[in-house]
Amino acid sequence: MKNNFFLLVIIMLLFSGCKKSEYEIESYLENKTIKQTFKQLKIEKGLIPTGVAQSVLEDNEYIELDFNYFKPLTIEEARELVIYSAKTFFNNLNSNEELIELRKKDYPMKMIRITIFVYNPDYSDIEAPGISLIKLKKTLIRYSSHKERFEKIYEETYQEALQKVKPIKTE
Image (cartoon, rainbow, N blue to C red; front, side, top):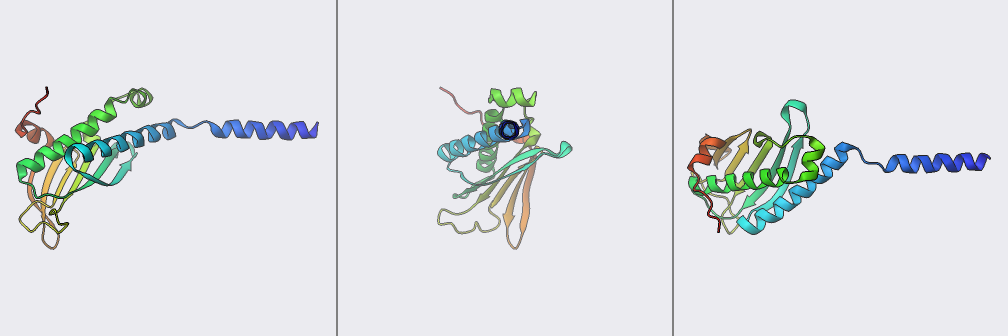
C-alpha cells in the first residue's frame, strides 16, 4: 500500500511538471520566429545576427534584434535596410498563428526594436561622419556616427521613413 502511494506521488509529480506554462510556450514560439527572421535577413540582406534582447514589463514590452552589417551605407540605404528588417520581423511574428492565438493580440510595431552596427567589408570601423549605427526603438529611427562615442547624424519616425522608402517590387 505504501509503495503504491509513493508510486502515485511520483507519477503525479512527473505529469504535473511536464506541462509548460503559456509564457514558456509563447517564449518558445517567439524564439522560433526570431531564428527564422535571423536566417531570412542573413540570406536576403546580408545581416549577421549578433543578439536578442527582450522585455516583458507591462508598459515596456519589446523584442530587439541586433545585427552587424559589413558595407558602408547612405542614409537612404540605411533607412531601407532598417525598415525592411523591422517589417520582416513584424510580419513573421504576426503571421505565426499559434503565437497570435496564445497572445490573443497582434504584436504592435512599437514593440519591435532593430539595432544594426555598420562596418567596412574588411571589418574595420566606419569613419565619421559615416553611419556606423542604425537603431529603431519605439518607432523612432536614429542614424549615428562613431567618433569617441555614438553621435546622432539624423533621426526620423518609422512613419516618416516608411513614406521615403521606395515600394518593394513584387513579381
